[in-house]
Image (cartoon, rainbow, N blue to C red):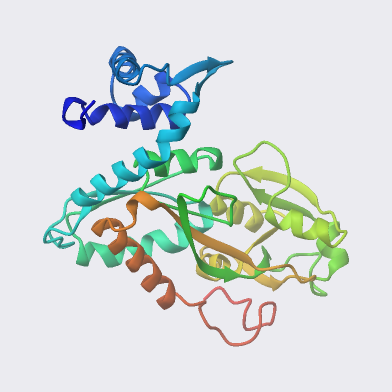
Length: 319
């Protein structure tokens, strides 16, 4: 059969079903009705004389014919998409694109205000939306184009997901000023003896710093879990609990509360932040431009300098 007798949109449906493993989810991804996706699949089955997908439990599993064709189909679709993404007088000053990014607490609070302030001048008509996406959904959202960029720690991702390190930041400890149990300083015994606030969207389980502490054979007491670092700072300012946090965030936010920053009493591996995007977005002028702005901004947002080291008298001042 000649290609001019086949609707190329059918291959978009094929790719969506392959990635989602479900006609229903493929329909949602493509903003189509489920019958429309089923009809498109039926047309492709007729063209190839093959079922293309068979039900396996609660998923639609690809047949050998689909597995054989899916990579060249996806490459062809990406090449077609690239022709639409090719620069055609792209001008950030007049572009009205909505950019959607997924940022977690610390990165959002440090990066987003500075980024929007910068882009409000360079791209005044663009709209920026920051959302929280579960890590298990990040690849799907990037592949579907519902997400332009994602920011997180280093994660195991598919080869189709590109990533670039933004920065590494060391951990520090934040506590209320004049903490009654820290008058003699913060050593490891006091750190492990006091209770801690952790920030996580999960009900239980260790966070990054707990893995690092566990690697060294230490375990701390968790007094509260919350979903927001600003809430965590507010809690620490009103209690005797401690908060372990990347230094860049602590330096930019401790002045909102009556807080003191202490160095970690035990050295932990620095925490690294990464930027993620889908390979299909490589070459998209808006996506390329935004990534360039983010990297340039991170180079300017070097760790704020202050006199003395964390935990010294000069570093404890809140401004």
